Amino acid sequence: MSRGQYFDSEPTVPSDGAARRVTLTLPDLTVQLRTDRGVFSADRVDPGTRVLLGSELRPAGATLVDLGCGYGPIAAALAHRAPHATVWAVDTNTRARSLCADNLAALGTSNVRVVAPDEVPDGLRVNEIWSNPPIRIGKAALQHLLSGWLDRLEPEGRALLVVQKHLGADSLAEWLNQHGRTATRLLSRQGYRILEVHNDDQPATH
Image (spheres, helix red, strand yellow):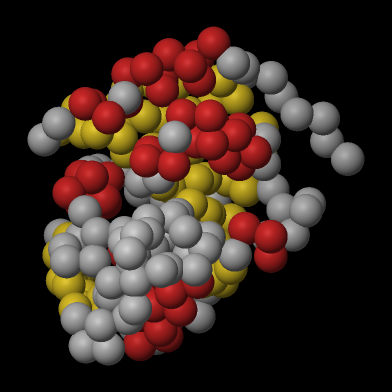
């Protein structure tokens, strides 16, 4: 039987039914998060996510997106660090979304909306996108995913992407720079790159 992938909308592996938990430890936040089989990095907070959240970067703006939220470590940090912003936690995986919603509710947050991609309002414009993107969905699918979300950025908005070097961080940055974006490497740590991405062209305002 196929073990499925964490980016499947409906995980093919059954829930293990256990109260599996991982700890997210940051300088300003330590939280326990419930996880399960069939979601990304179920046994520990992914090292790339820890690099992104452990950097000196801080969220800014009224509308933030955690793209590929999984069970919610990035959303939890954004909600804590930007309590007056609205955080959209987006994932295709139904089990991940359920875990994320439960985890954020347990933390007492009220500024996070956990949604499937097709539940995001068509006209939503965002100030920042924070993501440990699903590299393993394949290059074409990843490029399509990122392009759609980068098009939602406000004129001065940015995306912060953490990508493992050996999984194509530099080639992704090159592709972005060749397709209407400016991708700058802000940090390289523990084999991961943090890319800051802006749109080259100012979108029309309506």
